[in-house]
Image (cartoon, rainbow, N blue to C red; front, side, top):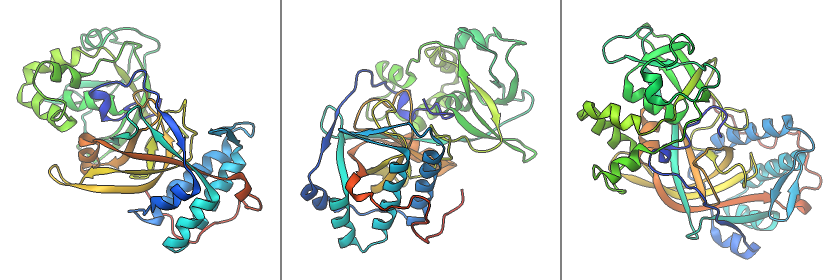
Length: 371
């Protein structure tokens, strides 16, 4: 699972992908050159995400191996691959396409339908209180040790005196914090506290989105995180029953900074991608084409290089990606609405292209943006 972000994408509200596998399809150099990839974001954010993967490869055990098809790469080779990619990205577009085709091996990561499917996740900013007050009446519990008490048991006080209380939240925001697995608590005095995943109660996860679809409240097309939130606010009497459908309960711990992904590194908004850690090498390069919401009513094409820097329990199989959108209202909107088809590729430098790459040198002089 994600190191701190348990959320596994907002799609985890709606369904699980048990048994999904898909496949990796190798492309020829001619096919790669025909892809005509054009990145729609800045080189600064791309280089920031790359540096965080480089940091991971520098710290991982030297004997670790990263598998692409029939080839295995050492951490040093993965660093060299990213450095070579940075050089290629500094070339004019036509030369870049030829260099990617000549120097990189590319695989299409496809689900059982021969395509890809994308959701999004984010780190919420949530109003909080130190003591229960009005709508802020639901405790954020610290980890009490191993327990199998259900969500309903815990809400009825089963862990009183065992699980520390970190803050009090609105019950809807508390539930969705548990889905995301991390967030920034904002108190009336201006104090802000990051909290991250610390454990759970070892109960099964059951989707409340799927429940509401089965009950006819939503259709598969209309169900989304904003829609579920709006429904529960309009029908507060439904909250206990709907939340009780999911006995899984998540515990949190205070963090000094934004929790990172499965690499132990901070995530980069719009550049960090969660994929299946059992099938996809950590820290590597991907290219994504899909669509994403600009507003609740308007969508825009997304064509972008990303780094595989996270994972999640519901992110299963090839052709399955969960895009990290950052924090705040815009990130919440994008994460809450995304359940989009698209295409997904993985790329890594050919070993013959890595000869002479100095992994310690600065590959480019572009600035690195701050969080």
